[in-house]
Length: 143
Ligand code: RB5
Image 1 (cartoon, rainbow, N blue to C red):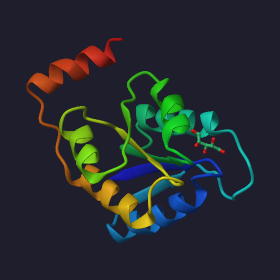
Image 2: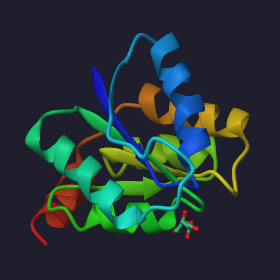
Image 3: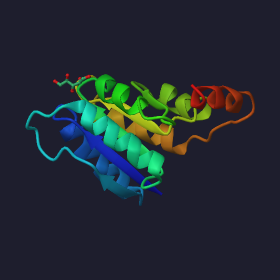
């Protein structure tokens, strides 16, 4: 599995931490930046990650910004992206089981590194349930 990761300056440090976590799980990483704490504009990074997932360059995506919100809004502008901002492992698991979220977004200023790793694991380890949820995901995809 290959995961596209991207962050703005607010999420840079968390992205670097979570890259190590992904590597320990044996997951291949496509790092789309940013590569320092110099101020950048989060819409560019959310869009790049969304496009990498939709093009098939990556299977899933991980985003980080200060709150996880701005960068997720950008990713969700890419047709076919279902990016969920998650602040706990339970919502991360449900984002996969019910929403088939293909990108997860985490707030670096609102989430500890340990909690972020648990959130990421919960999402990666969950399976989409399909069934009635597939119908709703299809509705999202058709919007
Ligand atoms: C950048 O200062 C900050 O606004 C950004 O990382 C994020 O929190 C936006 O949603």
